[in-house]
Length: 377
Image (cartoon, rainbow, N blue to C red; front, side):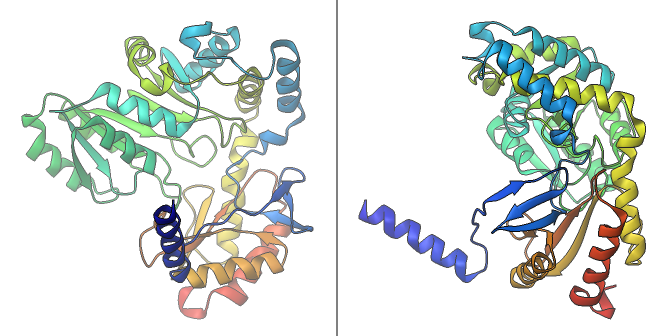
């Protein structure tokens, strides 16, 4: 144990020296966009709850009622204890939302990608992935034991070149990309990627975890992965696809087979949130509009999504900016390597339907006057 402790302490010391050590801060939600930390109220601009549905009365009521009726947990894998009727309803709603035959819900978005990719491709197959694909897509690719080629971010010519070079020597091929890139807020050129994939008999899979309220247009994609834990305000991950693909996923995806199903309250909350999303287009449009208002105030380019990064370079500068904003009453987390590339530490601001324009204006003024200098605006 002495060697284990010394190893851990040395690693932590090195990370602290580089300003890369992570710590947890107790933070209590106090409404759609407000939290309390260290006894102080703050306005949060770092949550992925883009539509604030985790705090919506109808969503919370659905979770409570389902918990009281069916209990706090699922008990086991859905293949062992049986498929709770709430799952069937949730998966029907997701398939309808995405325009597919069926859907399969997982315990989280990370678990979904760890299961989907290795189920569809393996040794002898090819994966071509965007260099900024989410960590769980990259982890799923590694688990598959496929040959992996990485293309430059959103570079269609590079995708074409890689498939032209490598596709013929592999039985199956999978093209992986985020729909909305979580750290930069830009969108993948999904329609163009779909055309390239089809031309090379390659299956396109999009991780659209941040897409439900962050921008992007609907494009026919055979493998549409997403989460229930961001704009939907609940928890879990899913794949929407054809009936045959979903049946295969339920039969072979290890995180689905060997994980306990989501609690009934979580599933019911997801169903209630999807109802709200389907019936209120104005709600879904609000986060991008709020982000655009912020960017206009700072003379930044119009955002593609409701995620706006402020690149600051080194970790210590991002941490200092985050502390400054907290002193002014805002919660904006500093994002550092390895989450983002070296030299691109940043503030990652996320805008939600519940943010007041006056608070956004106040935040923008502080960022302009106290964080960005003239050359960076």
